[in-house]
Length: 171
Image (cartoon, rainbow, N blue to C red; front, side, top):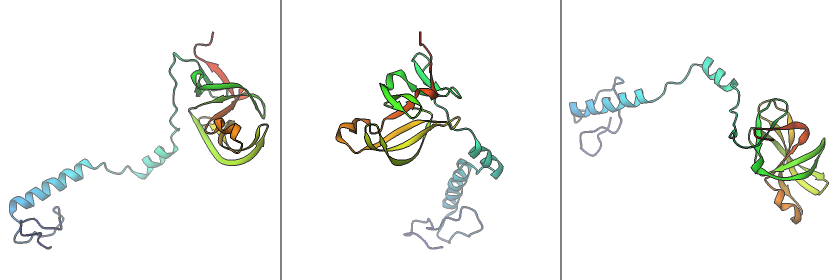
């Protein structure tokens, strides 16, 4: 070990792992080092066994729940919440299986890779979206619109009516 600047502390901290302190290291400095190393070891969480790690990675994905006081749209297959009525932009869209709604934001939805598709309104880069809970394809997300009149759709989500139901507070 090398001494650091003559202050009595060694630059390599052994933390009680069999290394001997230099003669310049005082007993109190050694106790100081061991105390803080022991505290650091105790504060570090131990790694879970491999069996527990496998259970954690196979666990169901977190499911977001929208407030019960709001009208919501849910997956027709598993009833996972998808969007709040407040996020609805338009009901006048057409999907591959009929009518579809345009939403500003959604929850419990996964996104596939983007690809270019020619839709009714022109060329768009879109990514299919699916329910995180049951993995059903619900619609798509507009990643990029190539025509300036369609730019408002970028970052928005289409969900087909065939895959969603109305929940909470619809009279």
